[in-house]
Length: 413
Image (cartoon, rainbow, N blue to C red; front, side, top):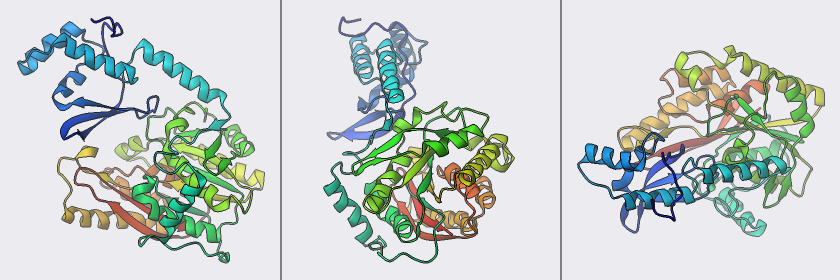
């Protein structure tokens, strides 16, 4: 192995996301780190994709050459493998000494900081308050948007909203529908935000004590309410806290909250990430039958009652994920999009009755065929708040033949 390549006897690729990408007209495989230890996207020539599959920690470089020859009848030069390993290791995509050192440094920095930094400022949304003002205002005034919030408060108070967590470029106007209703009807001083955890968590729910940074200033965490919740839960809500660092589903909600209320009132948040309900869907067991979920829901309700705080809940949640990019066989057609909308709207009907179990049953009925990533935060929010009805404000699709995402905004009263 060349001297400029770190010695790795059995190179192993970390758990990363792989997706098709075109660079300068060439078809490549893009690699992205779902845990955000690395912010880079590494592009590997498509013909080398089989090489990545052999980076499993079980094959030496010589083994990889031999296996590649056996499978594909082609010789892959050691220099080619070394070059790929060098790029992957520099980008923190290999399970190597270099990655482990950097991981420890990043995790310690996050653990010691009282602040959850705005990871996507300047990437998914503008980092300067002035530019972000214009960006968000355009979401409200967009032809698909709801118009600017009225200054006069509405009589009916909102108890919770569902807003997307897709990036602002694709879902901004849909966000605006939920936050217009919240701006006009909310009387809360604490916002409990339930977000989807897009990476694996050991525990079903993940809390943090950290304040959230936004371009408009810090949005403080209500640490006392978090403490009261943890006090009544038998498992560690902070076991997976590092997941908050790279997760966007709550970050996007804090940006809208700070935008709306920065000059009006002091507010705080309780940030809760929700782990997967996949096992419950597969085993046909309702979340209401899961002791850990019941315990958490009861703990939140009791903590809110004990604190005396005025609460509003937010679920940062998208709906369907379909197409080859998400593991489906066939590309998306216009006819399929119409069927997808009909299926989504039927699934949302129980939410208009504030029926958490009915919502879960609608998803469970087809084995979560459409991969509804917003199931955990929506179910949990509905279980926590005492709403009697919901209203669908906006439903949208971001159509892409390779991977379509659907999302909606709803308000609950």
